[in-house]
Image (cartoon, rainbow over all chains, first blue to last red; front, side):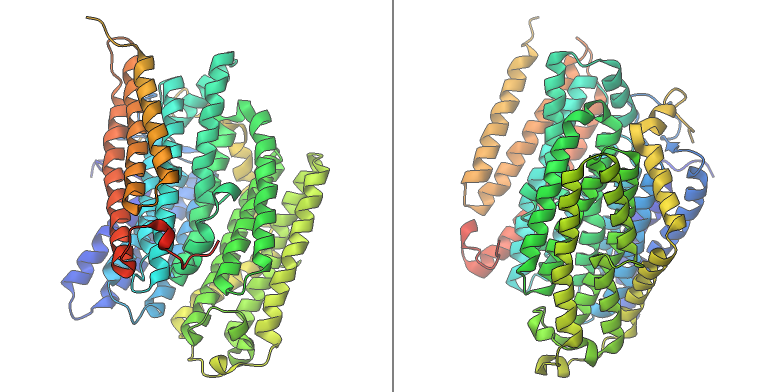
Length: 510
Length: 106
């Protein structure tokens, strides 16, 4: 068989096909009903996860470029370029996608429209993987919008109640405005260089020793793109959609948003800052450092006064984005390693916690922390998993988030940013307060009447949580291979060297 | 044949951005917010088209046109989703005023 007319590398092909096949499977099999759509979606996710592994083997040697068939690499060609950082983002998205899909089979059993739900879930994961893989702004923006639009619908999916509609509307308007800011930034970059390809833009920026007038336009483009990614990543002045959207979304989708979507924003920031705007690093480093500190302070201080469990987790996600941006803003390869490792760890831990919050909601029908008092006594297994996740995200040594926070702090000290690093450490300690308070209420307290009447949580919901909790523990106890992976990814990304190295021959054309 | 300089088109795009942004931050009507989003994205499209034909005289680069056409289609998706949400909110509250949506806290 010849090359496919449209080939976006196996994982994305499988996800997009799955998204098409899911509604068809649902419509064709009236007897199987919902199981057809669910099965189709889960199989597609697992297959695409499996197809990621050979890709990883191929990419370890160096980045792999995919250009359309019968097409020479040129500044005008749209293409994908897969490197280790892309693989990292893709594996996080697909792993969380599998967990969310398996979890959803029981979580949303009372609700209809399964075909749409799973198709949109697959599209969102495909968008994240595509964002990780794309090497030019055309491809990047298409996948970015696919991811965004799917997430608008998913946030407002439980449209019977008022909260999801309002939150979805607010999220859609804010995020669409952010995307347009990104598009304007891309337009300026295109005007400056005449191409949309990351590598060629980087080359053009490196070659011109920035004449003064163009420097200003580069700064404007950088600012616009920062606003665009900042909106999606919930960096502070643009974060207000997140604390509404995360609690309102169905819990598996909250896990996807927190673990995958805002990480895609952070990934975009990392990619653009390291590849394209590296010559401007003296500008974006202090700016990002300031934004990171603002973000973590806002997230942690507001999380202290929440009594809604999912809202608390949402504010904690904002704080964690601050840590990730801090790692990038230290401006060292080590800091970037910490950031990438933290993307993985936070996705696992926060995905787990949102799934736990969903299980509490399923069992008792409430998200208020005070009403969930004594939940761990009522359901020991769920309580243990929840405590593990909370301790992990609080940065307990021996669990995964501790390792990546240590890397980020170490990079901050090595970069001689002493005051910001002290503030970061203060923030990490501050966040422990509300994590421990929540653990105390849920584990130690006496069960309330709501909790005593809780219905049992099915195994299909517990299994994905148990897997994520196990991964948190494994990475915490044996972090070496994961750190090595993250530091390889950071090293290949830093300076965008891999992109430029692939340029003269255009890499491997298929 | 005389052609208009690029600056005029860019000024037009800038005016569209200003109008769209003003509309986005001052209007309360949800449908006008959606219109503001549309105006802003059209400003971005205009910028792409201007840059695509201004790089070399007499030559139009097709890359930006491809992006603009795709982006217009995606813009349609965003507007459709946003209008569906506006409709659901209107059915629930009987108002199009964004500030009447009171369930959201800061």
